[in-house]
Each structure stands twice: as structure tokens, then as C-alpha cells.
Image 1 (tube, rainbow, N blue to C red):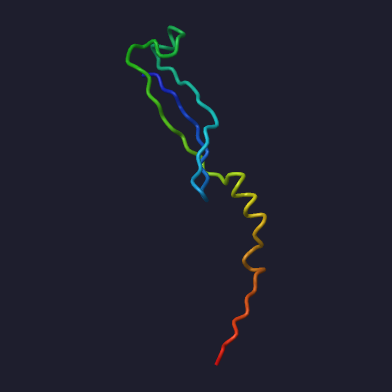
Image 2: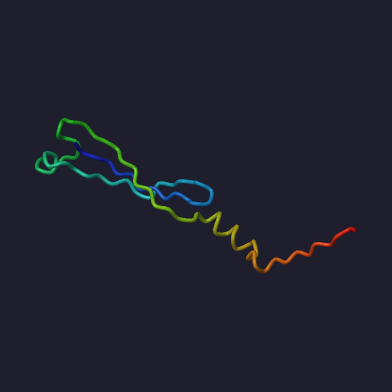
Length: 78
């Protein structure tokens, strides 16, 4: 069975997914004939996910100062 492999990037912060590439993997029968999907057993689809951080989350992290730089003072009202 021939397969389409959908390569996805999934942001580990916001879970946004985007398709990077769709590739074709021919089975032995289709490779011999030279035509994708000509084997007669159909075409399947597989998703391959890669974890990354999307541009929106990268930009958002640049705007937020590191947590160790933020200091808060707590005043008691006793």
C-alpha cells in the first residue's frame, strides 16, 4: 500500500500545527510500475509530528522578561 506522509510541526506551547511537507512513499508494486498508487490496494495517510515553538510563541517569549528578573515585594498590612 502506498502512503502519503504528512510532516507537521506542532508547537509545544500553544499546540498550533502547520503542514511542512507532504511526501509520497510508494510500495514495491508501485515502484516497479513507476506510478504512485498503482498497486491497487489504495493509498494510506500517515502524520509525522515534530515538536517546536511557533513564531507567535517565540515573539511572545521575547516580550516577557525572564522570571528571575521579576521581583515583587509583599507588604503586610498588619
